[in-house]
Amino acid sequence: MEIIIQPTAEEMSRVAARVVAKTLYAKPNAVIGLATGSTPLGLYRELVRMHKEEGLDFSQVTTFNLDEYVGLRQKHPQSYHYFMHENLFKHINIPQQNIYIPSGTTDNYEAFCQWYERRIVECGGIDLQILGIGSDGHIAFNEPTSSLGSRTRIKTLARQTIQDNARFFDKIEDVPVYAITMGVGTIMEARKVILLANGGNKAAAVAAAIEGPVTSMITASALQLHPNTLFIVDQEAAGDLKMRDYYDWIQEKMPDAP
Ligand code: GLP
Image 1: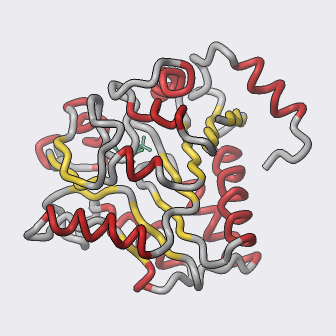
Image 2 (image 1 turned 45 degrees about the vertical axis):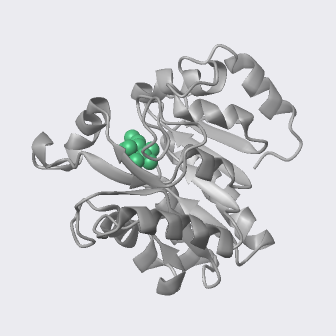
């Protein structure tokens, strides 16, 4: 596990964009796992800038999104389909057929989930997975007590998550109760994982994920068992880390910081 602490969310996003760009320079047809939420917005803005100004090429890239709300049509402004098209896909040169996002409106979720897992494998597996973290320590929509071996499936959202995400909806009753999400086991098969977090409301979850026990109560803690995970967090999200000095020292001594 590597931990990079940046002064601001903007710098967090820039470091993350450099990691994505490095992956694409090394492997132009990389498979990238994508996250939604407010945290990766700065990263997507920076990737769009790199595409427009520096020619960062997405023409051979394939993407798989982590999750989607059940019951929201693709055109619903709070669907993750809409979010991804508005904030990233419509600004870069990724072919439409290379974009995979779980369906929130299929009539056979079980078959869809199996197909989604199969497509990831058929496309060669995820080279780089981008993650945010919920205030309760979840990754994707793997709420506390999700199996650390779980695969893509339907999850019931925790009350905390519904409250956290209500800010994007007119009223809390509009937040869907179910989501379709990659499992922790699915995420753990990615070759490299970067988890982004900013803001003080993520400090406890970040500390629990990095320094607490591996537990299904904090599904991000499963990343302690992943051989190639990078946490990129801002000052505030790093606020509860006990080993902070050590992480800074490692970065200071690292010859090739990203
Ligand atoms: C949702 C998403 C997660 C995301 C989390 C945090 O629950 N399913 O993938 O990490 O929200 O969102 P935000 O970045 O807005 O804090």
